[in-house]
Length: 359
Ligand code: GTQ
Ligand code: FE2
Image 1 (spheres, protein in one colour):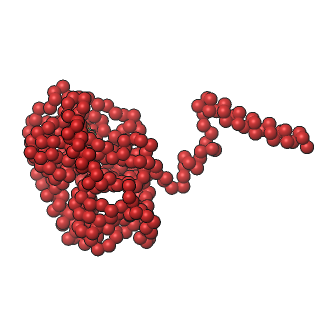
Image 2: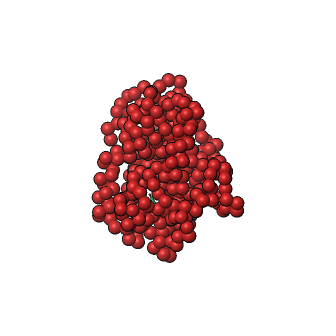
Image 3: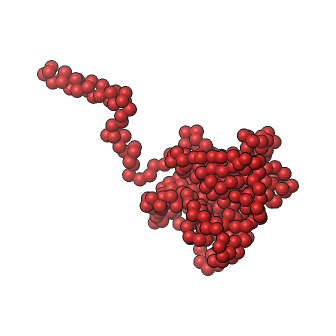
């Protein structure tokens, strides 16, 4: 009957009009977007990706020639921008990874901010980062913290450029809309001493009596490569297997060195693929030495020294070294754990390879 048809028609017209009225009042109906908002498992927009040292280093060098480090023009940093994140300069939705290039006898001015940062030194020698008055020496393989709201400036007294990996919780702090920034009144902050944090923590489980105990982060600001290297050797000797993994911790609490992301070092020995696993949260890996490949969500990523790659949340991951390889990594795991949303699992079989990454 004509009445029924016109009724249906009226309902449809009414519905479209209703949706328009919602949009005009900045209201969104959940029933249209429910599956997108709440997928059965995480569907990250962060893409598995890899940046090759051979391609990045020449550009960092060129930045060294073109960009001078004056106030305002500040830090010579190239961010690893994940192509899945719509042009945002972030490596994953929670992590900032970048390469920083400091030429011989250059300094980057003192400042502080609420995002926490770490530096993992890739090449060079004779530079230091002053962190709240403590001049922390930087040598290849060292991890140096510049945690939340700590004054920091970078100085290269050496005769060769220094290149390091910057890891920050900047994307997370951006989401939380909690970024504060301040320039130091002086170009470089006064140095109170050298490697003071290491002197206060002189060995495993040993602490200078009365040494300060910051609440928000590790009191140890420099983790030397020779110590890390030795610990990896011991762990491998004790456990065997293809991979030995260490976390850089706060010696006072046993928690992560900075509150908002984990710093890890993985030594992978040749001889096969590590078990395929997946976890919530993203990781950014820095290849310190060695060659090999990782399979991320079925895609093969070949890597060598200086390469950087990212694993998105809930992606299946395994590693295989062609020669003994050391992988530094940062991960947002401490945040997920604190919020009780961290999950991880080892998959029953090696993941199938469906493609090879070519960038
Ligand atoms: O070296 O202080 O990659 O403030 C991003 C922000 C490095 C730094 C980054 C920073 C720094
Ligand atoms: Fe900074």
